[in-house]
Image (cartoon, rainbow, N blue to C red):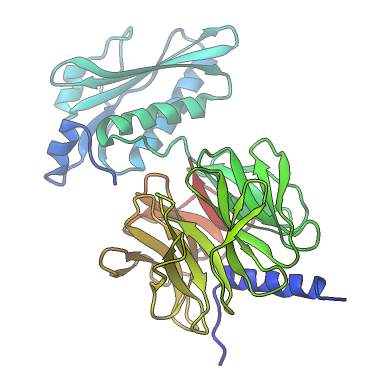
Length: 433
């Protein structure tokens, strides 16, 4: 019986077959001493979240404060480093009654203050209070346009996480992916929590494999709008520019860390190989050359190493090599493996794996030991993992609720949860800055 290739690899093979037909010759570490002390005992930080206050008794202002508090709350729950405490006495005339929070067991208390008297804009002041010293240990101010309340709250929560972890939280980050709610596969964007869904393309065709540039301003993706698979660059404002439109297959690209070049899957009417191209699509050099299909590139954080999928043994497996072509190494030995994603921490590669004919699940291989860990366990198909920018989470596609949806889980497979309630089916996510 033939092996059932994973859908990502099969999509590239389908692209190849169609293009050949058409083109045939006529580490993060904790930074704050309080977190170091608590994490050494496996404890969470006891963090109080007070009701956000307002400058005046306006219904609109109160609504903004409630929304910003709820966004902050969800953002602080997400990283699972806080024991969230609520119900303490709210601030009175901006004064925080910390003794009431101390009796509830809080070590620190988060407060927020909203003022809409800024000529159509609003001001938000967020403060983090140390209950023991009665001091403000973190304070941030944001002046923003109406409608940007969620974004300001995300930024504030991210600063709280930064204070304790030394790196910002994920509240400000976004996920790009393909979605078919229109009946066609278009490139779409959501906040990390599934809110602010936005369709970026209206190609009315098939889009595949979107990837954020390192600065988060540009997306590379595969489009069939012209009838053949081509690579395009897409700005978040919807502006598009062609990248690679060579004969044959142009697909599945990944950015180098400097954002000035990409690794792309190109075939030139032959077998698909990996090529280094600049931002104008000019080929700089070939990276692989074999009779196999080689695709799904992913770069190490330093840009010196490359992971990819190849069917050299007759079925798809994960390989790595140096960008200069040396040290080619097969990283997986069983099943059908595809969609490698190199961790931003540089220490592991996540990928999709199916044990011949079985369901697809997410696995991670530790590069130092070659130890393989399974993160999902047959709850539907689970595919196309992509790391969060801090390397602490993975977004992936799962059918555990009947259709292809975006899910997110910890890097150890813990606490899987859906990303909002996005209409239609969703595919091939990429988590950007």
